[in-house]
Image (cartoon, rainbow, N blue to C red; front, side, top):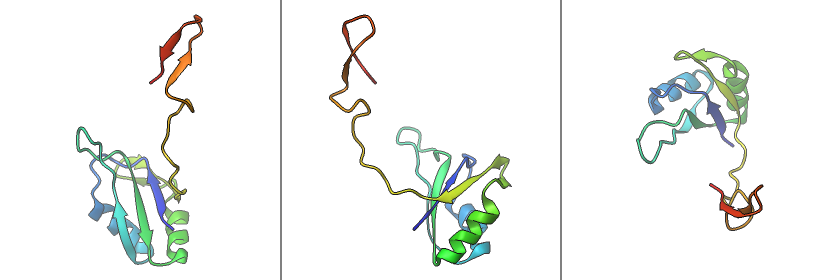
Length: 104
């Protein structure tokens, strides 16, 4: 399982995050998704640790902690959902005016 870490500084690095979490156990992997257009860190990441006990200790200690000027949100990561259309169809839907409009 992995840990979701939200509300991160846009200046955070994988090394920064690994160092903080390593205080609670061995870190296997750190992922910091980046914006496709800007290459900038998106403000959240994922940390995988060697043991569930280490993960639990890190979550308990770091959820709500202030780090790099931000209050972190730390919890168990949820399984990734299949990406599909938000409208459940082809993206076209009836507007309030009775016509059809493209939803984005």
